[in-house]
Length: 168
Image (cartoon, rainbow, N blue to C red; front, top):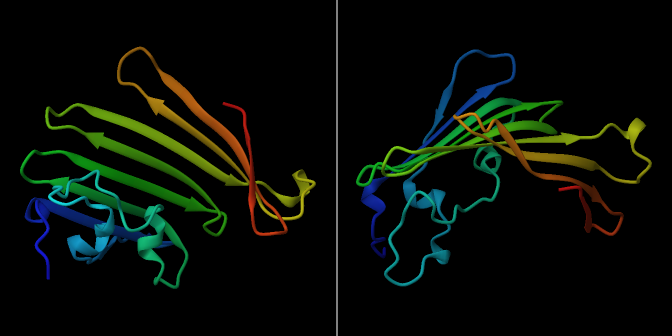
């Protein structure tokens, strides 16, 4: 097996909670199974912001056959002390979620981003197929407050494609 530069410095932590349970469970995964190694360029060092195998953190938990209430994904670099964390809470049978992303740089500076994704009820939508609303915003620790930087609706079309309506 090819040695991946920087892999020894990376730690991946995956945890989850089942709906209506209080306890967190650990999901063991080798570091190299978390990342999409085909995206690494020759000589590139694996890091917390390297491309993950799955776009959505929930996809690492696909084999769990119960409804999930919360998941946590933490990727840290022991060498430069950078960290990327995702906390996600699910509701409405995992159709809706609230997600927090926390980026910590080598100097200890923290950036926080939240996302709310909601499956809109059929009674509100005149459309064949699911319609999701997505709102993404940043939370600042100083007096700047909250910045909404993305607001959209995504609808599933009968042909399998999706249509987006961006409000921001």
